Amino acid sequence: MSRHHRSARLVAAGAASLLLAVMGGVTAAANGGPHSGPTVIASGLNSPRQLAFTPGGDLYVTEAGTTGPSGSDTCQQSPEFGEVCFGLTGSLSKIKHHGGFVRVLEGLPSVGTADEPLGPGSIAFTGNHTFALTIGLGGSPEYRAGFGPDAALLGTVLTGDLRHLDGLDSLSVAFDAAAFEAEANPDGTDIDSNPVGIAKSGNGWVFADAGGNAVNSTRKGGRNVATFAPVPTTQAVTLPFPPFTLPAGFPADAVPTDVVKGPDGAWYVSQLVGFPFEQGASTIWRVVPGHQPTAFATGLTNVTSLAFAGDGSLYAVEIAANGLLQGPIGSLVKVHAHSNTHTVVAGGLFAPYGVAIRGQDAYVTTGSVVAGGGEVVRIHL
Image (cartoon, rainbow, N blue to C red; front, side, top):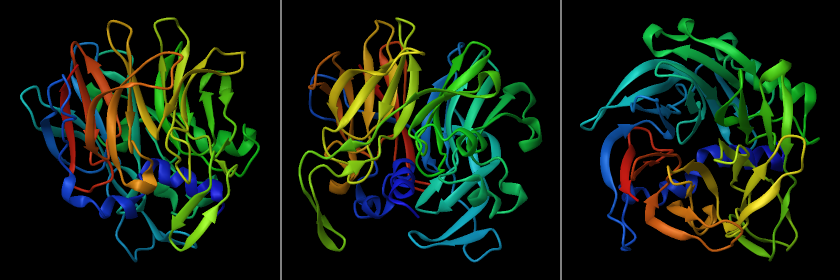
């Protein structure tokens, strides 16, 4: 696999080898600042990713799942990751108002390793019941086909209705992100699609493709909204596995992870920046279709999710505040426009990934690549 593919996989998986080294800290910790500490409201999730509220106030979370059983006929051998398997273990869950969760849709596609699952990634609602859901992939249509016909929904945008959920047959394919990447290849590199964050756009959707370094639209058969160039490292990086040094200027993948509409009507796109995941290298981009992306905020690290509060303030999740090579201890931060310094609302979070805001509270997923160990925590803003 290419360097590009490796970076895209680690975006969604959160570098599982590093995560496992700090498994003792699954529960979030407060930063000791003026904000109250995180409160766990749901636990036992399988690699939870993004969250979203319905207009009526119900909170839903995607679970990337646990992939498939090792050694089955739905496994492939990867030269970089070893055995990668496919299974129908992803889920969509509703967070109960008084805590805990219930899975409202199970049997969704999940692929990779049990430590690095890709599956249900993000959800967005058009009403109290209708929604769109991204399903990750981390590769090409040919890679997808190698897992067999049941894997056909990997790398797609699905739509559904909460009132009529009955397995995969109750969902419709709104867009094949992997096929679009193969045909259009907006960034001009290898064919690699991993649809993650999603937002409503007119009668369609826009989504961040972490594998394709692009934000794309499902409208009019698919079109590219923005692409993002590699981010050169600013200094040499010594790697521990095995020891060698990457020179300054190494082109890290751009890796967009989430897209939200701002109060001004523009799109705001979070960026993780791929291997070697340099601290401070991530930018939040402001995107107006038909124009080049402009930097809205800089100096962030490994950002996976964005959400605007009711007062127009923008919040971001850093899955690893010091960079993934230093371990997946992340933060929820309040973003300051046109600045490279930002306010930590809650730090010491174990592998945080998604954020949704309602009223004066943020809801964040943690333990985002831990089977059965993921949580949703509430943080007062």
